[in-house]
Image 1 (cartoon, rainbow, N blue to C red):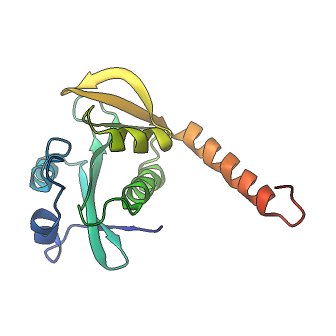
Image 2: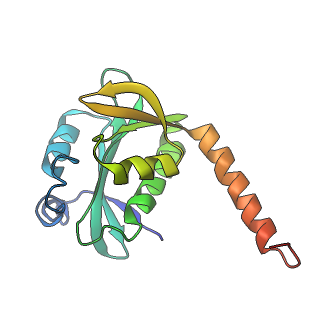
Length: 170
């Protein structure tokens, strides 16, 4: 599954704001995209991005540096209700993590989620995010230590190569 993170532009801004929607009941899990875009207008490190699969808009993500703690965060992840369950959330998180590592060189990435949102909790855990024991705005904080994440990804890649090698035991 591949997605592309694209900047917000005059051509896609209102699609991100008006066309992307959550399932009823998920509104408590994710703030409206317009709120995130407004935050990005006043926080210079916040980067709002549209998530595309091929040329189809499927979601929204934003990352940036926390104005108080100085930690780098994935501040928002939202996948359209019609696109959920297709792997776009995972692909978007992997893409934003790679972008943050490549462009910023951060060694830790923090995010949080509504404690009732088990889909988010499971996604972040499966990507290697670990609970910090801290809470912010009623949400548990989780952190991805990028060096640990990279080593695990390399180990998984090496294991896959060995398993795929001709004559390898299965």
